[in-house]
Structures are given as structure tokens and as C-alpha cells.
Length: 300
Image (cartoon, rainbow, N blue to C red; front, side):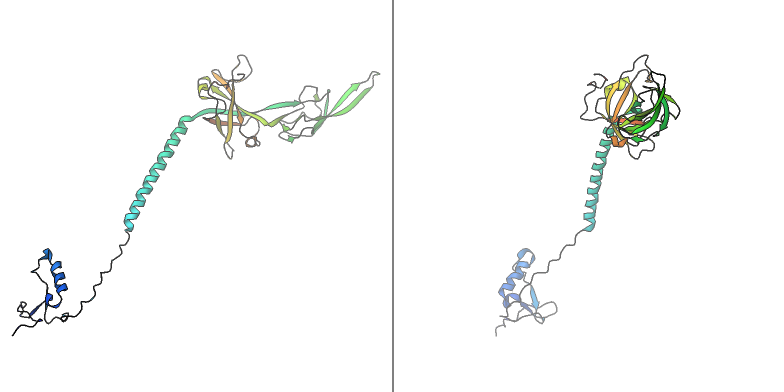
């Protein structure tokens, strides 16, 4: 009697009959052979006859589903490391840039010492000899052109010997600031003699001494930064000119030096300062400045 298609002359080590998968599903058997290492056609995977997973001949194979793919979690430590490296590189570049800028600035900066704020004072005097009768202003007062600064009583003698007195007003010739207190009441003042002096705050300059051997590093238009006690912010000025020292003059320019004249960049920066105020300055090269020797000397 011939063997059944579901039987096999082979048995497993326990004596259980083995079934050849190729007898149930030739395609499955082929797959089993292909999945065997080396593709050996003789090495066929077997299924125990009493296995619950066995299926009868002609039963369609169960559908095969691919294994679910697992999503890789981002490596947080790796990204943090990369960000840290990028931050360190950016910091190094920024620090190097600032260091170069600082060294460049230090090389272009020159100390010019102390400068004094000065103003051109205008003497205001009466038109006739007289005695001060009234005083209408005080030191540091701001006046407008035509404002009355005081009055002077004049005395004249007529042709018939009669003495006549008159009161004349002393007025400001222009806008300005009173330099010092006027002459007191009762003082005698003559034409040409200052009853009071005023200065124009828009026409103030800084004056200081500069050594002759540093002139090659200065040029007209250079920017000067001035600092001093009580200033809320530095004052900016421009190099205007250098005046030579005149032998035998009454100026106080030291020997081997010249007088450096600076003009404020904005009158608003010195509006609250008074002549005589001293500051210290450093000069910074200006790309628009005239080269050294190009008209920096007074009169050139």
C-alpha cells in the first residue's frame, strides 16, 4: 500500500513522523530552500506532524506582513555637542575680531594731553565817560543782542559853563554770555574800557600744547575725544590748526611745543561749559582728514 501524501518515511529524533513542506506547498518548500544558508536544495525545513501550525494540502498560505519599521529617536546629545562646537567657533571668531579692532584702535590713538576751553570775549563799553549807575546782569547770564546791561551817568559842561548830566544805557552788541560781573555801581568807566565782557558760546575753541615731534601724526579734520570731571558723556572736537610759538610773546606755550586749536563738533556739547574748563583728549585718525602738513599750520 502506497504512503499517504501527508506521511513521510522520515522521523524526528523523538520518533515523530516528519512532513516535507514541499508536499504541502511546493512554493513554500522552495522558499524554505532559498532561506536556508547557502541555498542548499537538500536542506529543507520540516514541520512536525503533530504541530498545531501544520496546514493541509491545498490550503492557501497565510498572507505575509512586513515587520513594522521602528523610528530612530534623535540623538539629543549628539546635536547638543554640535551646537556647542558651533557656539565655540562663533565665540572665537567674534573675540578675534574685537581683539583686532582694539589693537588697531590703540595703534591709531594718540594722547594730546590737557586742553582748555576758551572763548573770544567782546568788551562792551559806554560811548562816553561816566559813572556806573545801575548794573542789570551778572556773570554767566545769557543775553540777547540789544539787551540793556546797565546804565552810566555822564557829565558834560556846556559852552556857558552849565553842567549837564545824562543817563545812557550800555547794551549788548550781540547774543552772548556774560564772562564776569560788570563794573560795580559808582565806578568810573571810559569809552574803550570794558564795562562788561560777553562771549559767543557758538564760537568757543579748545586750546592746548602739542609737541613739535608729534605734528607728523596730526592733520586738520582729525577727530578728538575729550573727557573731564563732571561730564555726562565725552565731548567730540576736530583739529582746526596749529599755531606756532612766537618768541617774546606773552603766550604760555612751552618751549619745543606749538599751540593746538580744536573746534567742538557740536556747540550743544559745550553749551553748559564755561571758558577755562580743562579736559584731557586723545586723537583718532579720520579717513577724511587732510594729510599731515596740508594746511594744519596757522596761516597756511
